[in-house]
Structure formats: C-alpha cells, structure tokens
Length: 244
Image 1 (cartoon, rainbow, N blue to C red):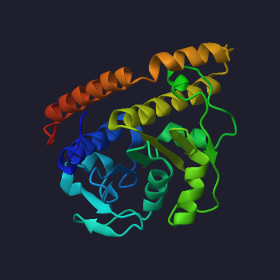
Image 2: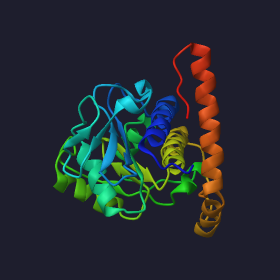
Image 3: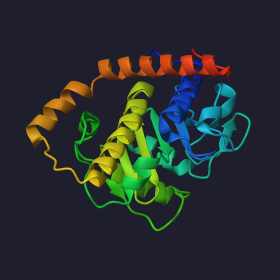
C-alpha cells in the first residue's frame, strides 16, 4: 500500500479493526491491533476501552515505546501490550500484530488436535503452534517473549483456552491471516462435530495449495473485498465510515 506516514498507517489500521469486528473477531472491548511506527518510535496500538468495531481513525490509537510507555495519543494502552512489543522486537519482518478472541478459534485453541484442511482456509497455515500459559493475560515482557518464542516464524499462534495472536508483514496479510484462521477453525469445529467420514489432502497437495494462496496478490484482492464489504455495510447502517 505504500504507507509511509503515521496518519495513513492509522487510517488503514482503523479500517482493519472494523474489518476484524465484521469478520468475527470482536469481543466487547477486548482485542487489540498494533502497527509498527514507520518513524521508528515504537508501535501504535488501539486504545483501551473501545471495541474493534468502534475504531474510527488515528485518534483511537496510542503510540507506545518498547517498554509500554505512552508517547502520544489520548486514552490508555491495553495491559497486554507486551504481546505486541515482544513480537515486533523478535520479528523484524512483521509490521502488524493482532490479538483477538474469535469464537471458533477460541474453542479450537483448547483442542490438542492440529489444524486440519477441512477447507482451503487451513492451507494458509499448514501448522499453527499453541502457546500454553498459566496466566490469564500476557502483561509482562517475559510473558510476551515466551509467546513470541512459541510463534517463532509462523504468522499465528493459538493461545490455549484464550484466543489467538497473529501478525503480518503488511496490514493486508495480517487481516487475511486472522480472517482465514477463524474460517478454518470454524470448519474444523463443525466438520468434526458432524461425524461425517472425511478425507484430507496429502502434504504435497497442501504445500501446493498454500503456495497458490499465501501471496501478496491474494492478500491485496482479499483486503480490497473486505474494504468494499465494510463500506457497504456502514453505508447501509448509517454508521460513520472513514476510508483512506
């Protein structure tokens, strides 16, 4: 997208938040999206006390340094800011980090089964690691580092009995990762519960499918679709829509 300024970055970040709410990632005021500051000051994080669907623009983000101290913006930071700071520090190729509680992904996070390709959506991932922690919230740098370690080189990590954290090199990629993971988990929860006999593609087929889908072109087309869908919905409901 050629984002080079905080203003354009946060405008698209606000759209991303509302897309995630629209696609099943909303959970009251829980869940947060962060974006690496293009000027190198740390990261911009959705402010506390509002839902993903209520993020309308740049004023709904706060700028934090790597110690979680607020540098700019109105409002307070989420207590789980170390999720974001530690992934950004561990993954220089990541510019967007999201933590959310989509229903089917949360249910699946409690399972010990690997993610299976009931639908094409699962082949975005092949494997999704699970992070097990005895704490309810990730509020210390050490806990954030442990989560980042479990994530490794993947773009999503299930947080057992809690939710999911996912990321991307771009906003488009991160949104696709989050949306398609929830679709894949929903398919597995429903498919497994149906009791129907199933067949699954072999590993080589899955790798081919992944190479065909996990591409910047697919992310761009999907992002443009989600934006149009959101804009249409907000126009029909009379809610305020801000699009870069």
